[in-house]
Length: 470
Image 1: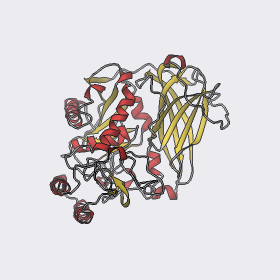
Image 2: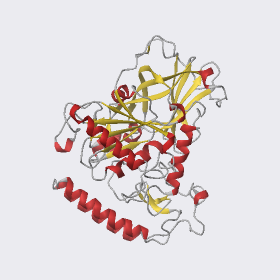
Image 3: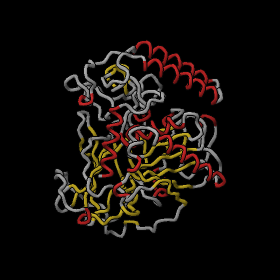
Image 4: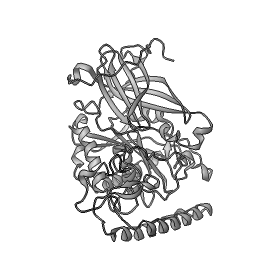
């Protein structure tokens, strides 16, 4: 508990944000609120662990109210005296994924979280909203904070090993990408930087990032690990790394996350950032990406370029996985009673048309026919081969060969579809074979094929980049 910092408050309605200049409401610094998020599949609670002032606010100083309607949660900052909303931001979280697993039905869980906001000049309400069953945001928690309180930590910015890889201008008008590494020893610093540069080359070779390259600043922050590699529980390998990344999140073998949210943010605080990519010094295929949290990827995987670009799509733009034949950890699949919030999947609600109707190709029917049955047959056969290889402890090289074979097959198969290259509504997306639709036959959010982002995904990324740069 933080004494005299939290003030009781009723559930008053929020007023829309005004147009006051940034400097009138904010100091120019970043305020980080470290939270504990606890609950089960049916209830959740929050508690503040710490409030900490970091460096200059790296985000936009003009687009402070989030109108994108993205994310499972939203944070709001409202002036305590006037109830005027000063800042809002949609996001997703590890807890938001965990609550859909079977474990959350059986027991309680507690997860570290943090929200970063521009530091207000005056006392404010911090509000958290969550998307309800009808798809709209509802307030689930609030507290009042006096930013001038002596209980707000104001540490000096720690010096760190930061390399500027690409600087395009003022952080307030750029997307600030921070690349972190986990599982790299001190002697592997050159490898860390080489891996970071290779990953960036892959990202900026793909549209829309190629066209928007000048809208980014990129920095790499190196923190050495005592041993190479990260924790791999199924292999009996455990590492104490600076960022705490590990495979097997939610018992999904290839899912790489860190649950030490406050620890990695303490490290990252030495550099400005809007988005974060964590490279893990491993060859084993794996990664993860959570909207407005971070993305991870195995830097030495034969599919590292794909992993980074795909996971970064989740992280920066809230793009959904479009695949639906792979094993996942989630028990509660996306609802089909309402339109999903992710910009690249649709339930064709409420009127039988996808949310990307403005981008539909002329003459393409909705739903759009494709050879779904053949694709599913081939995909599931390869899923079974993958499970067998994993169970047998096959070396990573064999799995990489399987992925390469799959890529070759599916690239040709999907490119031969009647509506290949068109924007339509193709059934099969978001882990569901029925009831959810994706915009194109192929996309980096659907397969490992080297096809880049479809027009709908690219447009969604463009909109997010605009929010940082305008």
